[in-house]
Length: 213
Image (cartoon, rainbow, N blue to C red; front, side, top):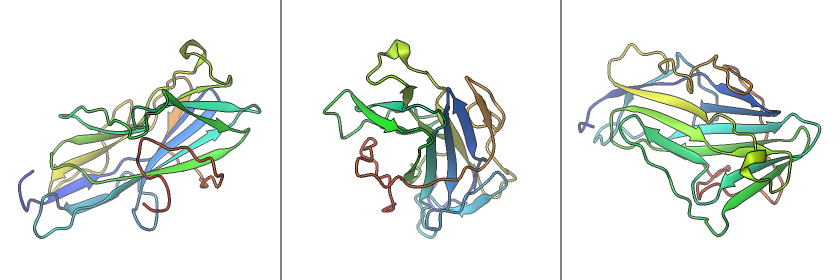
């Protein structure tokens, strides 16, 4: 990006995905007060590599809820981060700092919901950015890949455009929009969330996922 250039950021609506009894939500929130942001909310005068405008730290909230009457097991590749940030011009898989085992397994009791946070700064590249959360699910403990539910990747997009801009949200896309359907349904809505207080909270790819963000 050009030094001292000004940009506008268009936020998307929250994305809710229902997949085989697991309800997942991904949405952008304000970094410090955690107020949800929606399509139509914009961050103008966004500075990247700027001497006059401070960089903006973006923050995502992901909630995962087991709506089934039985336990659900979440499987995450321990050698790749559960959260991924990729661009339309730059495709890169973020590796994890925690790779002692092949997988991390999280257990969700019936009706249990957990909330995770991911904070990041955008690299100095003008493009559309996709933030995504990667996991597989099963009602069987240590099931093989055939027994797992292959949910569509939970993702959302940020559009960065030179300022002034008329953008009011992310472009329509099956992974970023508000009404696409995969194995369940996707639509735009907010979802109540609570931070799991258990001592066995999972570690996600070396990213801090708590109040420290």
